[in-house]
Image (cartoon, rainbow, N blue to C red; front, top):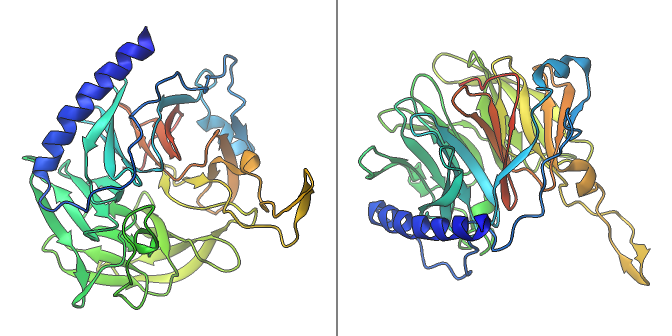
Length: 378
């Protein structure tokens, strides 16, 4: 009875929200060829919260992480039915979280007040990263079709903040963060134009894949130009450090640290984290103590030689998803101190909830949540 009623409510909410959001968009992407999955599955999810405390999904890799685990808090799956969940952003005034469902070309809304997951915007120009600016407005990386960074005003109008650099179109804006001085920083790799799964295939116009800074008057500067497909990014709590994931780093995905000057210039590039376990460093968030909570999972790399599987020669993954899927937590010095096991690969995450102590994890098909004993840096 619960599942049926919930799905009916979700369907009605999705229809209304999609119609409102579509009228607000100033530019729509081409029609999506993939049939959309529903906001939640027709049958109850197979996920079940652990009944014992503490939750064994929360692993302490170093004693320093113990203080962040709440003994009686367990992992929850608060929504599912997406194809590739990304870019979570929390809005405390409304008590809701937005996240992108990229292949379905929509932004989803999880409402903490009633626990529903509904469509916030469709089409969404293949939105990827989302963030809330200091005025409570949504800023979004539209990483295909329009290939731009936008802001949704309080009245629903869409303002374009950046769509080109030095007269050439951006590649595929990916992840985004807003600094306390109201500058907007975003990464611009190629993922949104590499194929049709997450948008439309296109040739890049930019010669490099950059990290950009946009001022309140829409002046855009390339602050980092030597990373191959930069991905997730975030600031330290004092904003003196900028952290950026390099998706195509050699030999492993890496997270780099930079010093940030008052004028926005960055320097002193230092490798803080090396995903040597074949982990897929992606999006991440930072807590008030400077710890980095990183989306983790298999990077898809294959063994050099095949193995026999039922009489077939199969190239197996180097890193097993069962061992890697989740969230790996690092202290400010880059030491792994904790791990949260998830049944799906985590692409991105953020803090939210009324006290900013609920960790939301966008993981493949689903959105997960866990209360922890810390708060987001912002």
